[in-house]
Length: 114
Image 1: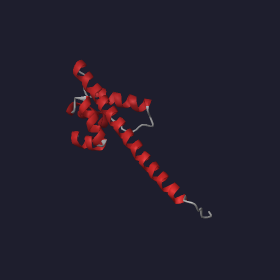
Image 2: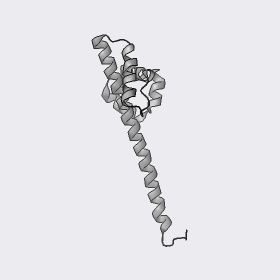
Image 3: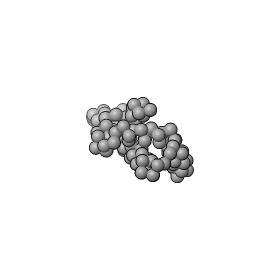
Image 4: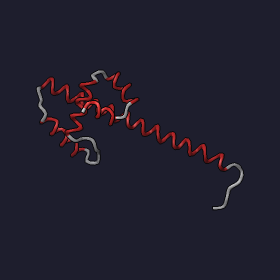
């Protein structure tokens, strides 16, 4: 490619920086939404177990059914569903959870509840 004169570097560098920043912000947004989803799933499991007396087997069945419904999605193992339940049990207030997931990646929450 022939060199381009007239301030090309001044054009491309800020664009590259904005692209990099947007990609990071998008990844953080996805992580936040997934962590909140995982907490909500855990809350639903915990709620049903408390109200209906469900045991651990329901988590295994739920895992299998969710994997069938979303075969390309990871994180739906029965072990992860138990982590989700533990997370919602440890942090029962959704407002606090929203603040938490904005600051701490999901992997850290799993480490603290497992």
